[in-house]
Image 1 (tube, one colour):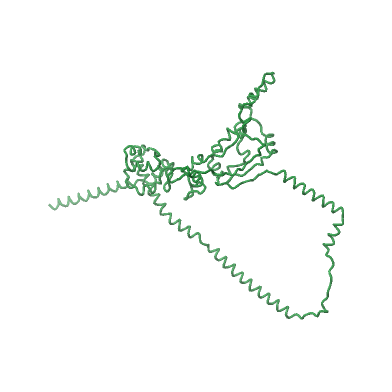
Image 2 (tube, helix red, strand yellow):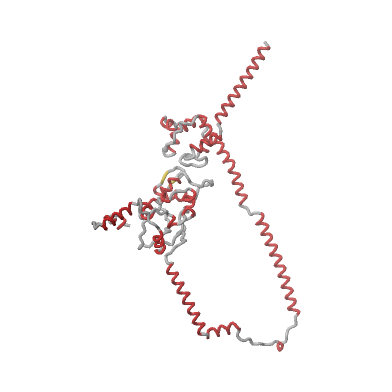
Length: 426
């Protein structure tokens, strides 16, 4: 009987041990692998989600911190449309809160993949929350004056005190010397009259010299004539002009680092006279999801100005038309009304790059006028720029017209481009 009880006791221990190991295994699986989850998150989720801020979708850190039903989260991530169609209350709330924007269906993700993503989000968000107070404390400590500044001020005060003592000592010594010197009698004081200085005598002699006066007048006339000529020549020439814009748009970041083509924003450069200022909806193609630099934890104040002009609320992703107002951009490049310049003729027909006239825009923090844009500057460019005739429909057409003229044929104004809109309307 005793042996049977011992056997049962050992068997029960084994069963409890195996159950415990199984539970641990299941718990580990439910937690997932954060490193694998990070790779999947960056590949699948970063286009619409961030851990600590709302983008196209919600901030996942707070969302997964409050939502503990991992089974429901797995179903939502794998096929959110099925939950919405089934009228699931949680799914409908998220769907309506985000303007009924459809989330991508990730049917290719297994339950293990989803568990890895959830584990990564919760782990990383917890690290960010724990690091935030330490960062704030560091920032507070750094705002105080450094020891070097304090000791420097103390040193300046000590040196000033020493200088004051030395000056007082010198003054008292001089006063004693003056007091000990005997006063001179009035008759002993020699009164001498000084004549005009050598400088005054020299000036009088030069004024009387007619040749010198004539030479000075010639030099003054040449100087003022040259100054007048240069001033008139540079009238309305604004090389280096860089006005303060309502939004500090960094061309070096967009055109330089990001390598965005100029005509993505200035789309009129290849099809019209004007390059055009991009509308704010062009900006929102990217900045609806990007509201700060990748190295910053706070939203950009300059991007916030775009939201304000559009009446856009990033928290709800909605626009308020009553709050919309235009951005008052300040023009940088301004030709006189008597000059006609067509962007498309230079960009599309000739194939010139924007940098030919506007300079290295991809390196400018804020755009300024690089070229003088004078008639002389334009003529010099026209003299040295070779025309690419081959494969250019405009010049091939002109060649056909000249060939027709040589043969004595009839040439109309329309054949010379006379019915093109830009000939009269610009």
